[in-house]
Length: 192
Image (cartoon, rainbow, N blue to C red; front, side, top):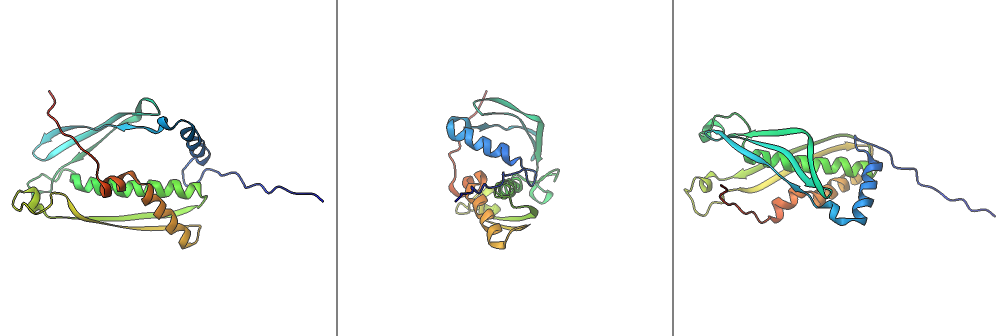
């Protein structure tokens, strides 16, 4: 009598994610947890009125200073109805974009680890805000969003229940979702 060992097929790159490298990274971080501590930075400058630019050049991660492949920047402004010049999206719209991007990135990674080929992932995010708070007209009105809603449409080579699990795991692991739902200490001080 002989016994055969059934081997699982090796996980391969999928959906633009290098799965073998991702799994190797998980192993390294598991052995050296401090390698996972990152500090991201953003440097902003006022341009005019409500228009500003923020640059992202470097960060600290994997126990060393690192730079992006190239410099990145985003601009923000307010629409004309809010006394801006409408040269860019508003800061709160970028917050919605950050949530959508974080959830979408997680879906891409998780689906790839589970070897689910994705065909499409689309998100729709909206947030409600009462500007009476920001304008100082109503002390009971919150300055930020009073509610955020997100819808995810996902299509891939898996049953709908498995796709739902991928979305749920992405939400559970999302840094932006965590910050929005659980808050984070923020300090602001005058420099120079």
